[in-house]
Amino acid sequence: MRRMTRRGFAAGAAAALTGLATAGDVAGTAGDAAAAPGSSAQASAEMRGMWLATIANIDWPSRPGLSAAQQRTELLRHLDRAVSRQLNTVILQVRPTADAFWPSPYEPWSASLTGIQGRHPGWDPLGTAVTEAHRRGLELHAWFNPYRVANHGDLSRLSSRHPARRHPEWVVKYGGKLVYNPGLPEVRDFVQTAMLDAVRRYPVDAVHWDDYFYPYPVAGEVFDDAAAYRRYGSGFPNRAAWRRDNTDQLVRGMAARIKQVRPGVRFGISPFGVWRNRSTDRLGSDTRAGIQTYDDLHADTRKWVRSGWIDYICPQLYWHIGFAAADYAKLVPWWASVVRGTGVRLYLGEALYKAGDPAQPAAWQDPAELSRHVTFANGFREVGGHVFFSAKGVAVDRIGAMARVVRDHYPTRARAPR
Image: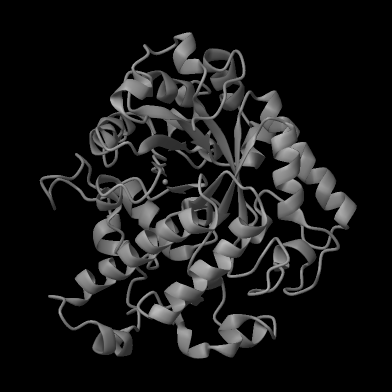
């Protein structure tokens, strides 16, 4: 997902956004969202979410190595703040680097907790998060990254029980980082099984993935999956088509297995906001993005919606209204048209982290920019709400942009869509 990009932790993805900035991550059926914007019917079920990122301690814990009591206190503070901001959903990152925020039999405890991967933190963070979120009337969506192994390139730095240490043949080093190879069937099966362990143990409301499938392109480097392509790629016209099929298999397979493990748990994905540019594909959006998920991440997000493999999609529309290369006001109607008639819900990912950042364009220095996003999106019956990146921004709210959204659009609490 762009979560790492937002804070500068994924160099390849950050470069993609930089290129975009300089040049060029649901409403249900029609009857489900037929109420006019602002009506009590609409307000009664609306996604109002925030991402709570744990990779590199972006949001929580504030630093690794806190005591169990300190970690719990910080977590509850985030949940309480979500309630005070009239939000109803917290999307908690529980598997940031092929490690876990619960006692997984498949993967080690996350280093984001103790500072040492594999060290028991002394409590059950995910179990506590689910219980305490539900106690507050919040939904808890468990956010997993399927393929990220490490934000460095040294296998020896991983926990001795890390699956990547036991199966180095599963791992590709790319852009100075370690990722699992999506082209290996045993990898796809393992990552699904590891994630499903959390679904089996806890009554999470949804499984949530971000935008990291095949890694964001790194200039001058080639993702080395040649051996896997030779072994499994026959029958495909090219490697790109084979890679997209690998990602399709991961999504379709996970959707089916979630229903087997815990029926009723939803499956949502938050992709980079541009599927394809119209100049590349007549079905694409009126954008000039430097990254296209279909071509660069080998993720056919439009297909997943049109095929009904997922329950919701939350594209990361992290650009302001009027941005020439990727205009929020052009992407919202495009995504609305994609979900229309599918039954897949559409939520919009919002760049709260940009509000008040002096490095961002002038539009992001205006506290009303995000409120304008919500106002604009309310004109599309397919839009079922918004998710804000991230919890730290909800807390700090540098220029009052979140407070403005709450004042303008969230006067009372609303239940999350089911």
